[in-house]
Length: 80
View 1: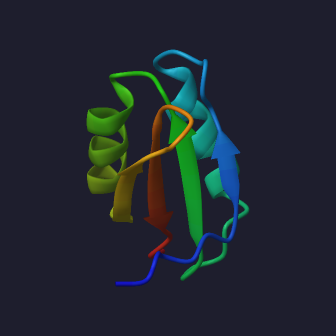
View 2: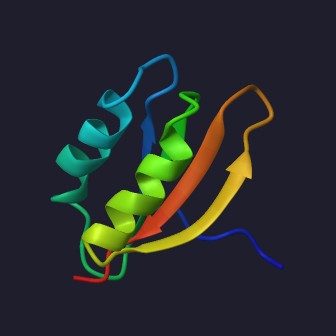
View 3: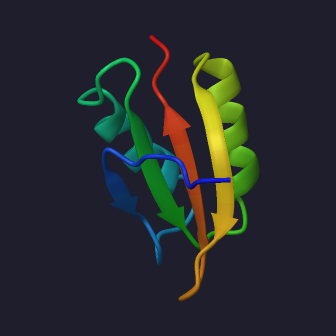
């Protein structure tokens, strides 16, 4: 299986809740419909927060993976 495309990356490692989600929300306005953005975060709350943010805003959480140098990557596709 190939890795999902990333049209942009937000590195929020070292930032605590709610800052990674705020960073995502601010950057998401510049993401065209159909494009993806990756959020890198090491806050333990990021996983549930990203999933909830996507569900509430009807966006697609494409993938999640552990980053080799710490934290997790969440790839989100803009649906609307």
